[in-house]
Image (cartoon, rainbow, N blue to C red; front, side, top):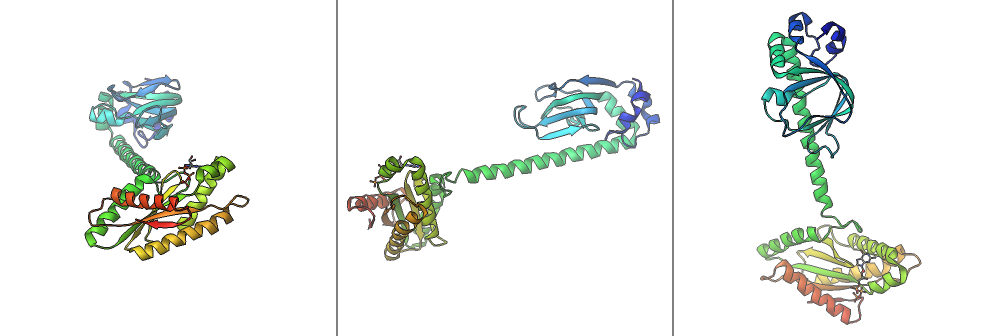
Length: 315
Ligand SMILES: Nc1nc2c(ncn2[C@@H]2O[C@H](COP(=O)(O)OP(=O)(O)OP(=O)(O)O)[C@@H](O)[C@H]2O)c(=O)[nH]1
């Protein structure tokens, strides 16, 4: 290879920075320079890689999962790819795809090791490159853990009201039920249901119904205590768990919620008729499961509905 013609380009790359060309000139004769068009898959898992590619010009993208996912790392002029699979002599763990037409210096495995043996500066540059790959890998892992926890918390939130959803309720309420039974402390559950909500939707439209749901959710949230748990149970139904709360205070809280919804929701819903809720209350028993506790609150809710709605009943 005509090293002299490419000397400046090569000297500017990360791998050859500070390398004396006198020491490696003979070895460089075994290298080649290739032009690679955009879109070419240079390296991929499942196919062994026997070359180190040094980017003299252009750009490549590294995809850690699949090529149709956004790239995890973009490398430009002066960077190199393929060093990890080449050094370890094992299959590549990522896809490297040429994302802009590129010109690359290609070094075979033997040539690379010979260059490392011949030049301390090149060996040091290779170490720095590998270290930055490890750091980039760690950054990718950290980002993915962060995204995962974001997705997990989204999986527990109801998109319409912003309250916790049924899936969250199943875990958080269950933990409280177990704790209540272990500590022998009282615990109450309220099942809350909007009255005649089908009629409301049919008369005023689904979007107004959504607004009403959000207004009810916000009002309930504003009127519970910091330690109480609230979730959208599904449809137009909500559940509240009141830890350390006997029947009398639980009914007082339920009554407060009922009144707050009657008053506050109509203020939020200018031009639309008032909304009311019915509430069923149940107290934790020694042999309860979360399901049996919720079932009794649901039965009490049914009593509230048959008693004319807009009221509180208990199991
Ligand atoms: N706008 C809107 N409506 C919903 C949503 N989820 C459930 N609904 C509606 O809530 C209504 C519930 O109706 P029903 O179960 O018959 O109860 P209801 O009309 O409130 O009657 P009672 O509970 O007996 O007072 C249905 O029309 C559902 O379509 C939602 O996310 N948005």
